Length: 592
Image 1 (cartoon, rainbow, N blue to C red):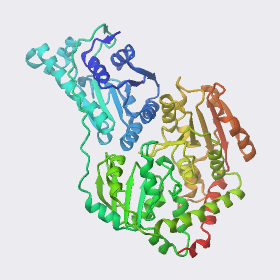
Image 2 (cartoon, rainbow, N blue to C red):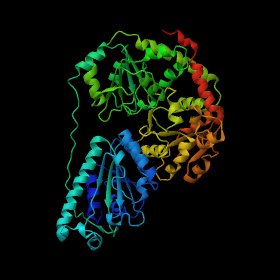
Image 3 (cartoon, one colour):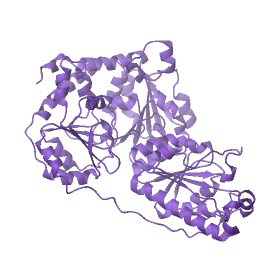
Image 4 (tube, one colour):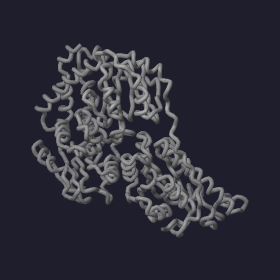
């Protein structure tokens, strides 16, 4: 086993090992050589090589998402570090634990015109749980320290100064790693190194001080009587569920919610919870009402007295707009972490694990006589019937493609969804309860979706199927540049030659300006990328071919596969808008 001869490099590796941070995603470079050598020479660590730092951050995020423990990313100095920022922002808003480790040049080489130097300290300040900026060792390359930064040496005492630096660095590393473990937020550790960078030793020369702060934060309970009284008196309660890890909520609590006549439970595909009485396609309820004569009356009937939310961020813009206009009297959010005032009505944050909250809360709740669920359940049934009728006659399009995909995917797989059109179309359909669903809904960008899916596939035994639009796929095509593609990994690219989602947004016009700068039309395909990266490629542009391809697409012949589905650019938006027109039949105006 080899260690870098640089004390701070040894300290970082030993602290990671002590805190159980085992998975390290490394991007190549020279300045990070002391850390790369130390991590890769220790069999405790699982090391992965990803060249593109932006892809590396999302790859690590996908791993951490599945493992539910911190994963580290390591890069060299300079602009390499900045490429981590999209993945860090996603991790910050999704409470996914990333440890970002950057090698840096000595402080005295910053802003003097040296190559690959930028101001790396606190560079992620607004989207990070903690920034640990380590001090440069004076015991390494002492002649350079004396030459360029003699002020680093306290009273000309190298030994005493190095001991103080070691104590400072240990303190910073403990703070950073305890933050990532306890708060599930990304942290940044910046480590300055002076040359030489490649010298090694057989045993570490440092004896770090490890501080373990594993105490769970106190949870709120025992003084909920006023909330229970409100809950038990209300006959219109809405539970809205955002992103959840599969199997994270006990089914007995979901059953209790689903069988209460005064509760309407709205979920999304990323909620990963299921019950026959839940409402899993929110936009199928809300969007058609907007078109009806009696929309004000219907929205007032849907308006909850109490809104209870848990989980991560919400996809549906429709439910956000509705709840911002028709505010609940009370909005309670349950989370161990942050509570977002998404609807400008947040009245209380229960800082609890959701199962602990339900265990305490629901055992004291009572069913209230109400027609709230029954009323909206009848409307849901109406919409489902209209959806089926429309899809039977719908031409080949994005909408029909998503139906065919969800009909064909096997059970017990994991779907990784790209943002924009892909995740929004997915909300219109029922997903098999045995299928897991993930999407980067923290920052909700199109960047990094494929990288996240590949990272996730490394960390789970389930087959992963990535469903993405064309822009998101091409934007993240460097994700395929690695040696970790599993043979059963699948990508479905729905290619409508541009950003088709812009066609359904208000204000779009059929102009050259719109096509160039908003829709960004193109004529690219994925065939040559698949050839370059060694994926099996197939392309379809009509329904029968799609059905035939999907029959064998998920089997494992020993190679990763990509299926490109070409859909009509100009027709997709018309078919989707026509869908909402169709299901908003005037029949609904007769519901009371």
